[in-house]
Image (cartoon, rainbow, N blue to C red; front, side, top):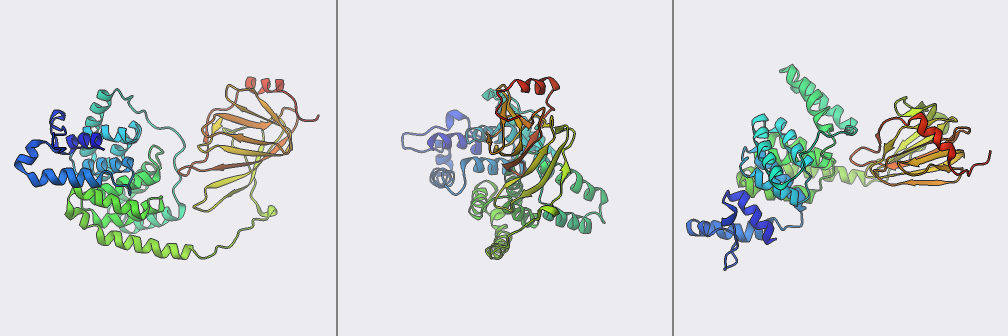
Length: 405
């Protein structure tokens, strides 16, 4: 903790690193602070570094995310350099740090975001950190019901007055920025809440704190984030959020009580289930998909039945939390990249590790059906890649045979 405190002290006081050294008396604040403002020196040692940063209610990574967001939103970009370094030490990736600036360009303004990026760039170079590249992957899915309510609010309050602002809110801010996969929905919400709270935007805080809690931020984490911000954005800004935070907590408590009531089970009859054909960019040959299912939150399991005609198979793909296949009919092939093709038969269970590039489908001569199960991470359960080449599929016939002809 002393090492962290010394590094943080440089960032929050803008003194040279050589000045931020522990003295013989065990002080962390520089002697100049004690000489001019001894009370500030004591609070720095005993409260900010003695109680706040070591607190267990919020993880060090989240504290770095909150402070970086507050500094950028307040235009205090000088300390961003040191807090970028601390963020890296606390587990933020370079891509996540850059995405904080990208997100806050919309919530704090381009000048503050660009100024912060210069500081981040300097830190990345000094630390020998590889510069982030633009994120790929499937855009995150937003809650359809919540999005519909938000769009109605925009259509009623913003679009009639400033149409172009309403259009950008729908198409750029929420349909694009909020779906970027570099930050999880929970982290993106925490960035927004920190920025709004730090700049006294209490009127905007209600919507985004509610969204943050829907995205997985707990009440204890929200409380501690506001507490931590008081030391970086000032007590007035933190206290101004209290009534808003209280209302959001109360609403979530009521919704939680309603959710505690027993829920009805769901039965989808086989003859009512929708069956679709696999997209040509994800499947070669004919594959019928369905019935599909997904479990309501907090569960994140989903899956369905896939029926491959002989010779049909998937493109290369990965699953963030892995996938399990249960072979129900026919004869199939499955392969992890750079490993031999495995032939599978009815009753076989295939367990594919997380983030493992693979494909699966029917053998060249027999159809195959399987039940596929996977869990979603941050709203995403699969990342599709390029189609399997005909040559690679043809070589699959050389695999060890386990199916009967």
